[in-house]
Amino acid sequence: MINEKIIDTHLHVEGWQDSEGTFIDCFERYREEMGLYAINLCVVPTVQRNVCNNIMCALYKLAHPRTYAHAGVDHISWPISENMPEGMDLVTQYRELMEIGFDGIKMLEGKPSHHKRNGGDLSTPPLARLFAEIEKDGTHLLLHSNDPEEFWHENMKSQVKEGWWYGDGTYASHEEIYAQTEKVLENHPNIKVTLAHFYFCGKRPERLEALFEKYPNLCVDITQGGEMYHAFEANQEYFKDFFIRYSDRILLGTDSTYPWGTNVYNWLIDRTYRFVATNDKMSGFGDKELTGINLPKNSRENILWRNFERRVGAEPRLINKGALKAYYEKYKHLLTQDEAEQIKPYIEKFL
Ligand SMILES: [Zn+2]
Image 1 (spheres, rainbow, N blue to C red):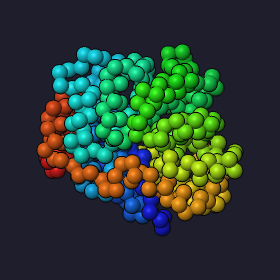
Image 2 (cartoon, protein in one colour):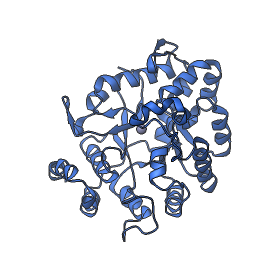
Image 3 (cartoon, rainbow, N blue to C red):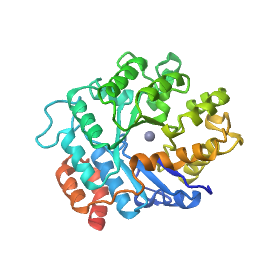
Image 4 (spheres, rainbow, N blue to C red):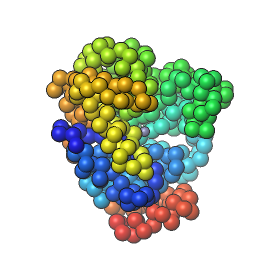
């Protein structure tokens, strides 16, 4: 139990049910046991398509109003093309998702695997138009761009099955993805974007500092990747100062993904919280030691909840059932048979 206001701003739902129940309540035990003020579900199109995952997140919000959610546009087919089906272009989808009552947009378009599948260009015109709308509206965007640089190294080859190796020459390089991401910032300098996982800059925080100085609306989250915490541990004094200086640029999340199980979510938030708020020495990520940086109250509160509320809103938005139903009807042809069967009873119950 954490006795301080805290929001887990980075969670995913990938399963339908487990021994603890169904996806519709999947983080409620976690919320209660750890005393979380609110949670934020982020679409993740690895198991289900974005369409399916968006609907699941919206249903969760309907069932539990202390829930924020970030939805994703669906590219319908790959690579991203100018010729999307009539009325399903990315900007139209974005408008529909915001009308449903989502609190922001999640994109994994900079994750090397997605980046490759999408055609390898973060500034392709359909994406550029979407970024422009998001920037204009001041909508919060959580963007996963890049991955740990080790994933390009030859010695990670054995982990290709886990999706942790990009060294076969078919993926953009680590540096190319950084360059493309920063081009997006250059083209949309006021976009309210949070780069997930510390923008994989644990070993090169000066890159992040330069971006923070240039783009006032830019934030990062400290959602693990253990490698980032290993970097913090190796350079504690520097990072304590960094976290104080940029405490208004850092959000906290765990990447907890249903159905990993409540014990896992509890452990992740415990470590992440104690890293920020205590000087505990504890077993950390990948069995390495982790030492808390014990931030002063104001910096700590920025990271635990205030930055998220400032960027996304002090209350989660309400779901517009009519808009959600219309979205379901319009896009249900994109669901797999299994997704369609799984989702149907919930649609009937909640809409
Ligand atoms: Zn994530």
